[in-house]
Length: 195
Image (cartoon, rainbow, N blue to C red; front, side, top):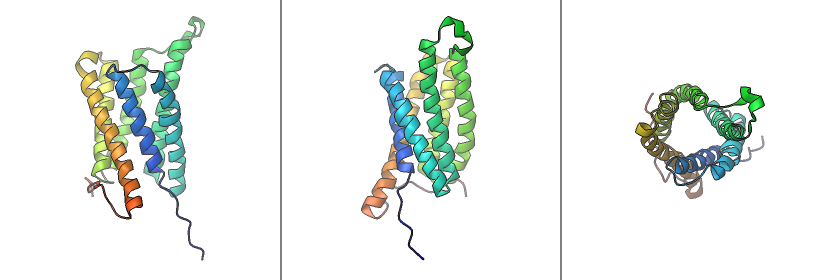
């Protein structure tokens, strides 16, 4: 029987796409930059990179990675489309008009999805559990910003939380890359929170 050809870990691409785009959006949320580069990154880095990683996770039989990378890749593609529609929809196409409340409902849908994935993340390892904990808190914060009008009270703390979330994603990416390059675990990811 022929030996299987070793393949790369698609998570390193998906985690990079998620982490980089999340950081760029937080730069905007802090008022440090506009949305132009975030839009482009949302489409190509957060969207395309994660979708590619998700489809590769499917081939690996990893339902968690498949669902997460495809769903969050679609999130970035949808967010980029929302920004585009918000700027170009003419008055006669008012059924396509997007309000802040509509964005809040979009985020709420992803809050529910993230809560489901958060439970599964606790079975993987501490770094994954922390990433999804901060992501869930970030979505809850954004829900309150958009649906309850709490921008002044919550946007900065939510942005800081999402900076941490992005950093954790990039940490997991680095842990996977370094483990292969050095032939041993270099960055600890911790034990699962749930058995």
